Image 1 (cartoon, rainbow, N blue to C red):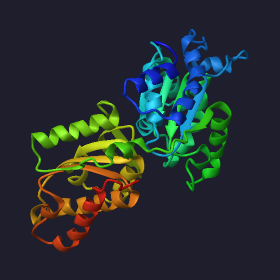
Image 2 (image 1 turned 180 degrees about the vertical axis):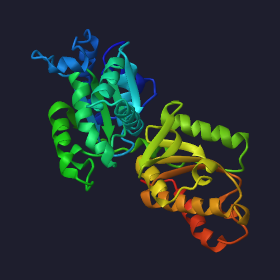
Image 3 (image 1 turned 60 degrees about the vertical axis):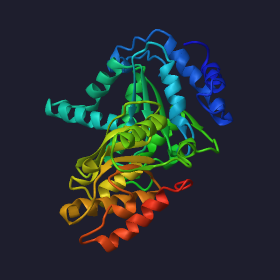
Length: 360
């Protein structure tokens, strides 16, 4: 690492790569204890079994940064991860990580493990010293019942954890089923992790989109290139990974996601048998959704058109920004067939969602 994170941040500001923000800069020293921890030799804990010994090493540090969308939380975490040295590390969306944990638990139970979480956590601890979670939120009871002990095991085994969230810890899993069982995890977070609110008044994600074109038609090489530029601008050229959202024993998949931005083709969102609950899960997990290759809509693809209307209604109510490539402008997208009258409201919403300050 060349210099402190603050010095690296200042150089990026000077080079015009990022906009100066006092709240962001003030948060950077909070990463110093983690960098110091990661710069030392890994503690010999003997894995999770070492936690049972009398002489336990000091647990790894943790940092929980929360605040409104678009304030730069993920950017700061990316800066930290990029300059954290050669330690084994992983930066992953929280939902995707928890899906892996549940899959590991299922496999451990099939093997007859009496404590299924212990071998799953031990495997993670053997692979990384740093976990960086993006967009931490607890909406599923299966996550709520596992995450507290999981964090305790990982940090006790020497895994440093950094996470971003739109919610203060006290609001995690708010109004969730059996929430009383989750409250010890909130106490654990506040005791074992540094909790910091990023109070920047600027929504940088909204700033990037203010005044920008967000509907590209027709679908051609220019539209695809424009969508790619928008993705790169919003994600910092990250390729993205599938985002798997648990929902009543199944999962909804956003093909590519990073930093609260999701991306997929029309047929991936509207060609499958998805409904309002699926779209609500997507809207709760993302702040921007990019939908590519929207075709002309008519009686020939009526079911897909109905799902598209539901998707737009859900994004509209949740104030999620939409970026799209389509066969035509909204007014000429659905020109004949059953549902044409109802689509007028969708057209109106699509036009409103293209406004420079929509979603602010």
